[in-house]
Amino acid sequence: MEYRKVGKWGLKVSELSLGSWLTFGNQLDVDSAKEAMKEAFKQGINFFDTAEAYASGMAEFIMGQVLKEFRRTDIVVSTKIFWGGNGPNDRGLSRKHLLEGTWNSLRRLQLDYVDLIYCHRPDPETPIEETVLAMDYIVRNGLALYWGTSEWSADQLEAAHKACKELNCVPPIVEQPLYNMLSRERVEKEYLPIYEKYGMGLTTFSPLASGILTGKYNSGIPENSRLARFPWLRKNLEERGLLSNETLGKVREIGKIAKEFSVKLSQLALAWCLKNPRVSSVILGVSNSEQLKENLKAIEVKEKLTEDIMEKIKKILE
Image 1 (cartoon, one colour):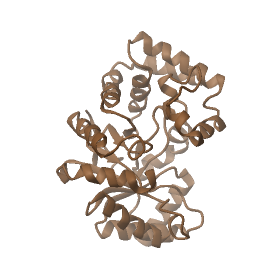
Image 2 (image 1 turned 180 degrees about the vertical axis):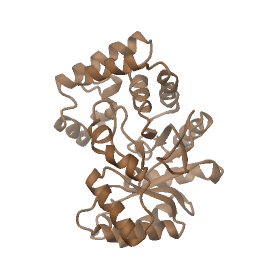
Image 3 (image 1 turned 90 degrees about the vertical axis):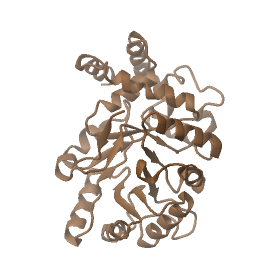
Image 4 (image 1 turned 30 degrees about the vertical axis):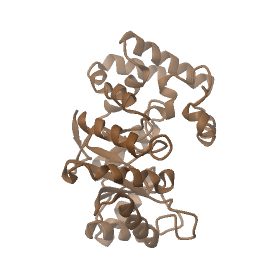
């Protein structure tokens, strides 16, 4: 397992990490989550990610039950604030919700602090000055060691850094974007000026495009699959064209490359993400320990991806 710095900053995270979106509280209870997290740690993963919105707080609660069995200094824990409930002040990036959301997350996680805390989405209804001042307070008061953003545009990140400089606030050090073979534009093009200018790192999510890059949807939606269980997710992917015949044709072609190496398509897709030097960590979402072990083999596959193979994949994707 490689441990990568988060951008230019001193924090080091495992190149593969374990997330809790759609799994903790939905597919995994405390016992199965404990099994997955302990196996992850055994295999070298030190970074665990969650959010207040996941399973309406239950994901944080479950993770908190397991974290008690780890030495705090051995792990990096992150959560995200934006969707905390249905009340008028229970969502968004106002100072009120950022602080109350953080306090509530820490209670569920049973932690004094998290290592990373993200603004889960941009909030056009809140001035950026209010948001960065609140995040500065959270970091300076030890509720989190660093802060970041998730799914912010390059312009929004520029505005945040500008406000931080003007107000003498602690700046964001990390962005958590969607990134996989089928969703590349933001990470590979839009953010290019951001990396060098501000030294931001990336902790990317959905490396398998919600399962599309496993190949299991090449011939339809199987029963009990993630897209069958979560119709809203299937609708989202359809609207983005990720279940179109054209996209699935690309997936089949990439599957042929995986077959040449005698590896699973999912392992190749994960290894492809790891080849991007801007990526600090690729967040995995697994439903059991066996799936975790299978995904971790992507580290070995990464070493096999030569420039020629990467170029061949690039041509298929384009």
